[in-house]
Amino acid sequence: MSFSFSTKVLKCDPASISFDGVDNQPHITSPQTLASLQVASRHLLESLQPVAFPTETVYGLAAPALNAEASARIFSTKGRPADNPLIVHVSSDSMLQSLLPPNYTFPVSYKVLIKCFWPGPLTLLFPSDPTKIPSIITANHPTVAIRMPSHPVARALIAISNSPLAAPSANSSGKPSPTRAEHVFRDLEGKIGLILDGGACDVGLESTVVDGLHEDGTIRILRPGGVTVEEIEKALQTAFTGDLIPKVLVHRRDFVDDVIEQAPTTPGMKYRHYSPAVPVTLLRTVSIPPRGVETPTPSTLLTSLKSSNISRSPLKVGLLTPLESVVAKKLLEDPVIQWHQYALGSLSAPAVIAQRLFDGLLTLESEGVDLILVEEVAEGNEGLAIMNRLQKAAGETCWVDLQSL
Image 1: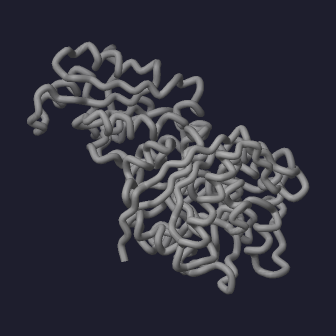
Image 2 (image 1 turned 45 degrees about the vertical axis):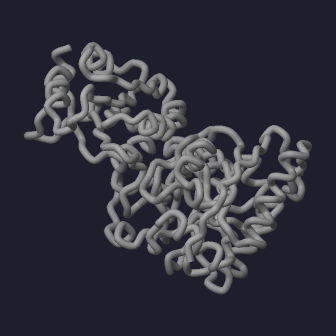
Image 3 (image 1 turned 135 degrees about the horizontal axis):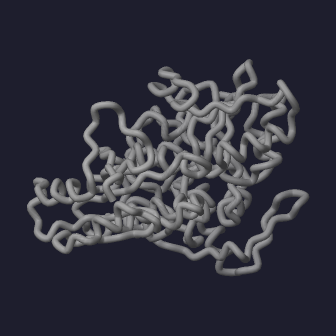
């Protein structure tokens, strides 16, 4: 059954929310914020309808994780494939324990990562107890992905609802993840009844997903995200010594697993994601091109753009590039193309680029550009997650020759 809603947006002030260090219960000083959270909780638990809410990563589309009927509405609202599992969000250690198999013993590496990065943008795979977790959440896998968000509104909503919440990004499946309430409204208006507006997301990219359940003790990063590989390595090196330090392996960089790509244990692995409604071309200006691949100069790229099969004149092109971009400076010299520029930030601050990436894609899409050119960044620190998203968003890739400039 499909529903049509008059979508309401309710404000929440994250600064009005604090948490008791003993029981992790929220203390809310703003009456408006408390009322918004209570309305959202009733929407989730009584109406069993999904609610969009802010997290530190991106806006999520929540449903009670232990209710299969409610969780199914996430899939129908987003148009999400049924074999794409959901991440479960908790607000406390006790809520986490309630989801796990009886007498489950945490790997020491998990204890370290939880101490360092929870609450925060880190998701961990745990053994799933099928008597507690509906199969629709795990896509019938024996593991379940769980994290504790740090955004005050997200944690408060979970705590007030007294229910773990399953939540992918609050967007139509395949589109860029929303980092502002207006992104959600523009995409899902009429499809959901309620959006909690807690302002812009601080991280701007989804959580890092870690699988530490293998017998060899390795930490396998299935999806890079808000916690960097370097931060995880540093935390483990601080807690362990010598040969006991777990190896950190990144999927597709350090290992390949065809099985989980075809039947993913976590979101963001199998399907094309993060793509706006207009074509995206990734301009490679950092990595070395494969042998035999053409590498046009910016001038040649301009000629190619002008001869494209897009009939509208003037051609409207979105530029999503770092502040230091040499290729953007050259392209912007052309007066014929109508340029729409969105500066991602400085290369010296990759966290800022990460925070602005999805907003840039969605802003340029809303400005009605015909296509978007987005520039590569180095894959260190947040750059790894940035490039993970861009490679999935882009329909085409072009290595640009900057040697002549």
